[in-house]
Length: 134
Image 1 (tube, rainbow, N blue to C red):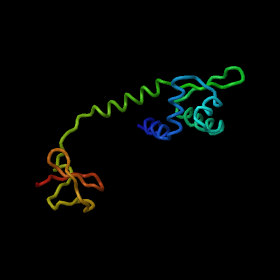
Image 2 (image 1 turned 120 degrees about the vertical axis):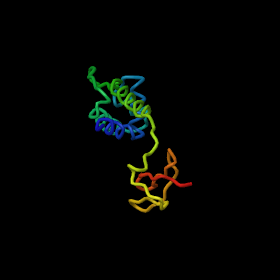
Image 3 (image 1 turned 180 degrees about the vertical axis):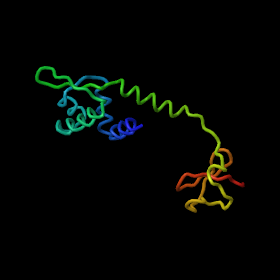
Image 4 (image 1 turned 90 degrees about the horizontal axis):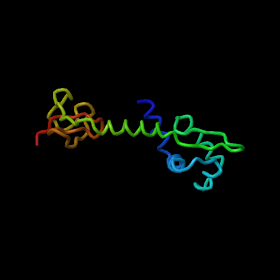
């Protein structure tokens, strides 16, 4: 999960995400990417370093220039992991396991609750649930 978190953090930057999109279409040098993004070549180089350190981008020297490309296998693995997360079956809450009470407030932090699956209420603050009596 640490790899997933680091990849998501790296891709959460708007410029880096756009840079990845550009490099998915073309292997380019930092200067060409800079012109497409409208930022300095130095800024592109810093973003590429972050992407390369995360394993998302590879660099190949071609003559005087270094061309960068996306390692699609890393993106595919990340996408598969996200799809697997979406496929987890949602189960109703078990109030007995969640420490429910009938006060209408969370027993842990005493904050308000909102409706949840299975007739439970989930705390808006800490996320614990309790059996609702509507």
